[in-house]
Length: 114
Length: 114
DNA sequence: TTCCTTCATTGATGGCCGTCAATGGATCTG
DNA sequence: CAGATCCATTGACGGCCATCAATGAAGGAA
Image (tube, rainbow over the protein chains, first blue to last red):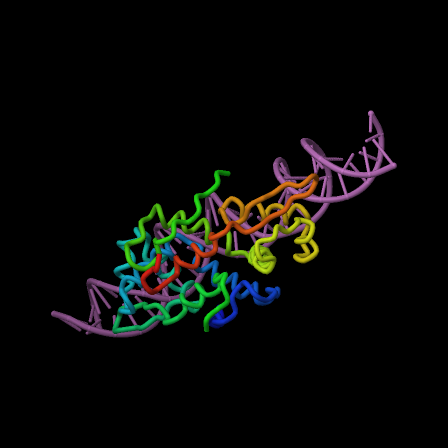
């Protein structure tokens, strides 16, 4: 699985024509966010305000098996939305700064202010 | 298929804990946007600046069969993102005003300004 | 009415996705 | 070393989804 580039800022959906290639890029990021469990993970990370969160904290919160939680985190990482950091035997995840802002800007209807 | 309520504004992903029920709501809207063809449809509608667009215009642009285009428009309508308007034998679609803004606000990392 | 156009719906098909149990690897502890 | 803990990966299963061809429904034109 190859990591995806973080979405370019300043290229909102409005404005210019969305080419087929770029539609595929955008689609993969949106797919990563189109899952209830991953939305809750992102929510937890947002509330952590940049502080890395241990994998073992997601599991009881989501009520999923450990393997499934690991799967969801991998999907978010592949989309460029979160980063992994290993400390000893544990893994911590944090939001990639600006990644969500880029997603938000895609849906700006007014001209981008970048 | 029951229509979904338009996403509430002023309830961004940051801030409070994302309950399982609301995660499901958000998921369905994100799923509607997590498809390359539907992203191109939204892009066309954004560039139309509120003007309704005939179904027959999407088909050559997307390069899909007529039935598939109709399917995608139905998904977007069920998510509350677009509205259908019938004129004679033709159907026109337009963005629901504010729907995309609501999606954008969900991913606001700074406190909402509503 | 009869024909044509436009669109929605149905049924079928292939592929992708979320989930779990089980396994394996890596690290820490005793 | 042995055992325990944490996590990633694998394989399997069930379900959902995008797509098409075919059909149906509704409106306009002759």
